[in-house]
Length: 182
Image (cartoon, rainbow, N blue to C red; front, side):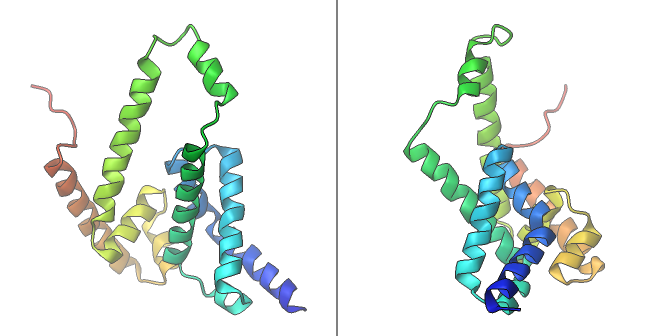
């Protein structure tokens, strides 16, 4: 098998193994299916350029894949903001008589602001906790996280509970939390 084929096989293997993680990063940032496919290809390309050998690709850690996916997603969003284009679906939704005028953008803005504040709070968590909390919030079970990171399930459980506790306290401190009914 040639070096090129070996590298391609390693990239295929890693991308299959981490597809759920990579796509969840894009989904949380509001990318649609077409954008997710583009972002996935960008992650693949970045791995190929940065790691260059099949052995290094196979040894790539979950956190490296997560950071690469996050970087590719944010770069895609920045490119779009730099050259804004009207999306046909967005124009059709704005013309829809079902939505009250101005309601959908307000809700979407509030949700994106809340997501950004939560994301910032997660970024401030200590290093191992932030990764575990992000994976948990992406839908991974503790046993899957342990397997992905090469840790024991009790270690992941401990980091997850402490990380969620820290996140909850940070969000409450920022005024983000469940509304209390009097």
